[in-house]
Length: 299
Image 1 (tube, one colour):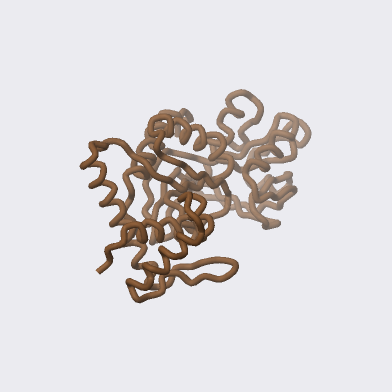
Image 2: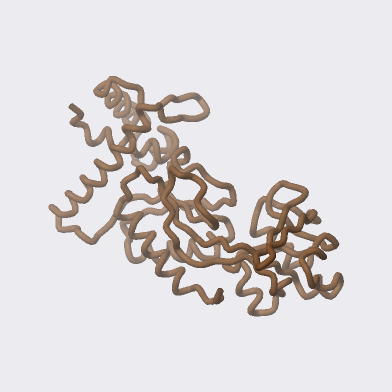
């Protein structure tokens, strides 16, 4: 029988932090203490929970199953502690959150700051990247992403509408002209996000259209694509969340507005087998309300 709550919490923190040393820093403990707690837990269980090398750590098959149960147990213990101490309604702990870079800077970071003013006992670690992060491998509690859910191990909760637009600066359109049909994009300077030389841009409608465009510029960063469009470098395909204010204030102009691009709503994603801690659920609710109020671009 396991009677080792410090060991369970240490194990959960090691998985979330990605290494023993990172967990030790977050818990304000020595690396020796963290290592001993984990070793004692593995001894009590009689199984190996983590495979560790000099470069990385991964959960064993048994460790992955045990980790899911540990998260459920810790959440239940935290709730019980809250009831006993009269802290019901107060949330605390660390939330590891990932979001696309540009959306994260413009919308998620300010929202998280506002959330923490309401819940000062919460610590938020915000990872902003346009790459798709494996939540379990990275020890991430919550991801904010555009588009449909492709990973069946995750739960997706809709946060806010979204649609994509093609946009360019007035200077670019003055020099190269504005296309009147998607087929004309093959003759334009296009800004692609990713590492591919070519991409297919699809348009919805009674007769869906697909156009293969060639990159004048390509970048792995959505913010850089936005900056290139503002500088007159070409036509970019962007979320309305990223460029809506620039369109409204004339810094960018919408290209081919009569040809709709497939929508990619904004979702909060979290592992399906994980008991969602109250602090994470509270943040998801907060983001849903805040982003819903911020939406102002129609359909």
